[in-house]
Each structure stands twice: as structure tokens, then as C-alpha cells.
Image 1 (tube, rainbow, N blue to C red):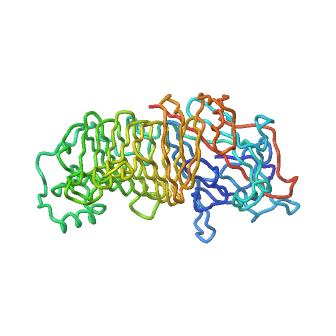
Image 2: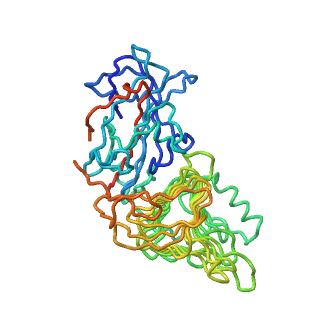
Image 3: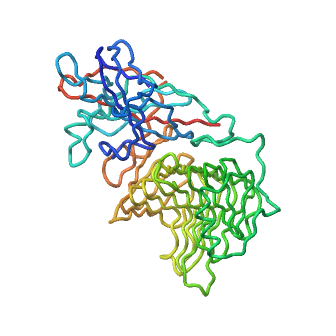
Length: 495
């Protein structure tokens, strides 16, 4: 990564990043990851100044060498915040500026309508916001009129590697899974460990699962099967259809495809699938169903899938992708179980299709949620059918990609619209400290013009124009304040 500055002396830079859009996160440092910080010499306005890859031995400086960071495929979105600090100054003692380009469409100046700066077949760089202060102030209560300018285009370079997880087929996540020579169906016939269904044993299995010794085959504890060791397991038949919960941990990948069926045991508090500690689920086809509660038991149905972080570290965040032919169903009970729960900071679910149904309750008001996003997790929704309300809570984020209209009433938001694949959505989204974003999609034209009204459609998606970025240069030195740049990247990699 490189940027453009007129300065030719010593400067200090910082680079931050986050999955998803930058909108509404300006100045909220806890929502961003520091991915590079250091000192270098500016190369002036005719050459790009690169961010350094080397680490610095002196930990007291807090310098971090830039390391590769993943941008999810299939139109995944990642934002970057690039800034120069006030630790260094130019020869006149003023803050050192970054260059950026003015709005691609002059009529859009001052509007949050972000066009495409430049693109190729794999990567698209969108306009972002210019920040006129360091550190970036929180964008609220009209402060954006003082310290933010938008839309603005980044001037610099991004170096990237396509298909980073090759030869893993159809995988868009991070980290890359272990790829065995062949993909085989997990269909164990001999149980290495056989225990009676005992609460103490089940609890022990759950506690030990992240630290269980790696194995090349699942470990079965009666109604719970543990998949760990960092390998890849594929379920494409009915091996687990008769009452089995899968615990996937330790950076292990689970693929559900073909006629794969996973049904949690009856009257169980375990979800059908529980993923944690950097594990990945690729749900392509089949059925995953939570535990049903017996009619004489006054209890909540079980959830179908828990996609968790599992530890207090973003390196252990979970990742999931869901496609057209998967069905995820909460268990039935007095209160229905939830279909998919995405939980923990850094954990991401990309939903491109499929059916997500909350479990049936005693009445329709007690139906389980079709989707719950919580604790700084993110769901990028590009398609799918949702039976049951959706809930986003505790700094969770739901990003809907397409053309939508919405209306709010208290914590409830009614959303209707069309995804890029022309499938429709009509859902209620409940917010309890969570966020909801609407993201325009390239090549999809919405029916109305951009609007900031609470019931309008989002802007028509920007068109690709053609990855080194250029543009008219506008230094911030005219205001004697630091210039920073926010950019977003859209990376549709198709395998």
C-alpha cells in the first residue's frame, strides 16, 4: 500500500481497517484494527510513499509493519483509514497532508454518494471521506460539517494477490483452510469414544473441545461430535440426521453440501452446529435443524447454527458463507429456536442465498429469529429468504446489498426491496444497540434517486471505470490541518 503526499521529509503514518463499510464508524477507534504504523520519508508529490512491511524492534513506539489483510470475495467490502499523525510536521511546522481527489461528480459534493474511483475484474476502489483532523473525530451531532469532506477519492496504490486460498475450491474466507488432497464425506462408522448421555460428560466435552488434541477424524461423545485439528470436514449425506450436534473448533472448516443433513438431538440445549476459535462453515446445500422440544416440555426450541468467535481475539473470529440451496431451521418449542446466530467481534457471515427459518412457537409472536447478529459481529446479506424476524444487537452490523426501502418504528425497522439476483425481501429487523447498513450494488439500478430520507432507496450503485488511482490533487494545507483519507474496497472474486 502506498499514498501520495507533497512532503519529502520524515513523517509518521497509521493505517486502520475494518470489514464492511466505513459509514457511521468514523472516529470510533475500537471498530477499527491498526494494521500498520511507522515512520518513513515522504517521496514528494511525483512518487508514491509506501507503507513499510518491516517490524520495529522497539515496542515502546507501537510501530507495526504492514502484513497482508484479507478482503472477502464475492463482493466483499473492506474499509481503510489512512492518516499521518501530528508527531511530525513540514518545514513550516504545519501538519503534513495527504493528497486526495475531489468528487468524481461535482454535483455529488457534500452528498454521501460514493462513486467508483477505479476498478478491474477483481477489485474496485470506491470514493470515501476526507478527514480534516487527527485523530479522526467521531462523526455525530453535525461534526461532519466541520471535519469531514465527501465524497473524496484516494490517490495511491494497493498491491494485492488474487485467489489467495488457491487451490481451495470455492473458498472466500480467511484464514485459508487446510486443503487435503481430496475432499471426503465425514461418515464415521466406529466411535473412538462412547459415553452415555450424561450431563457431566456433555459439559466436559464442551469445555474441552477447543483444547482437544487434533485428530484426523471426528471425536464422538454420544450426541455430540467434535471436529477439530484445522482440517476440512464435508457432510453431504444424512450421517448426522438422527440427532447429533457438531462442535467445530480450532480453525477447522465444515462444508455442508449435497444432501447433507444435521439435526440436533431432541430436547437438547446444543445447537445443531456450533463453530468457534477461528472455524469456518461453507453451507452450500442441505438442511441444518435445531432441537425440537417435546410437547410436554415448556421450553425453548434449540438454535440451528452458532457461528462464534470463541475467544477474546479477532484472530479467532468465525467465518461463514451460505448459498442458495441451504436450509437453516430453528427448533420448535413453546418459544421457537433461532436459525443462525453470528456472535463475537470479527465474526462474519456472508449470505448469498438459502432459507433461514426461526423455529415455530406456541403462536407466531413466539417464533424464533431467522437471524441474530450480536457483539460486534457482521452479516453481509446478498440474498436469501428469511422466515421470522431478524435481530441485530450489541454493536452487531447487518449490511443489506441491493435496492431497499425501509420505515422505522421504535426499535423495529421494516425493510422491503430487491437483491441483485432479483429475489425480494420483506422482513422486520429489531435493533438493540446494533447497526443496519444499505449497500448499493454495481450494475443494479434502483428505482428512485438517492435520498437521505428515512424511507428512501439507497443510491444507484456506482459504475466501474476501469489499479493505481489518480485525480486532481487537493492538499489540506490550505486549512492548516491534517489530511486523512477513508476508502472502501469492493472485491468480487469469483472462483
